[in-house]
Image 1 (tube, rainbow, N blue to C red):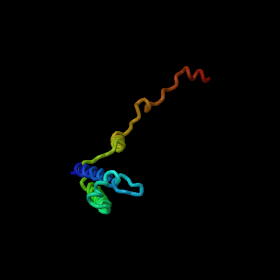
Image 2: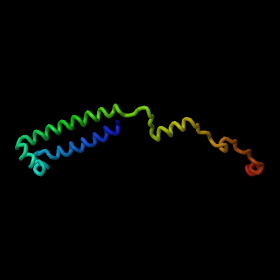
Image 3: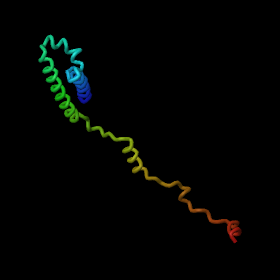
Length: 117
C-alpha cells in the first residue's frame, strides 16, 4: 500500500508540474504553445479557469496523499542507523584493555642499579 501511494504521489506531482507550466502567467508560460488549441475549443476565458481548478485539485490531492502515506508506513520492523547499531555493539562488548597493558612493569635488573650509583 505504501509503495502504491508513493507511485501515485509521484504521478500527481508530475501532472501538477505540467498543469502549472501550462498556465499563462505574466510571461505567457507554455500556455501559448499547448493551450492555444484549448482556447479554441473551450473559449478564451474557460481554459485558465480549468487549469486553475485542476491545479488546486491536484495540489489538495497531493497534500492529502502525503499525509495519508505517513499512516501506512510499516512500523513493525525496527529500523536503526549504522551509528545506533555500533553504539549498541559497544555497550554489549565492554572494552577490555589488552593483557600487555595490565601486566606490571618488570622489576629493574641489577645492571640498572649499578649504573645509577
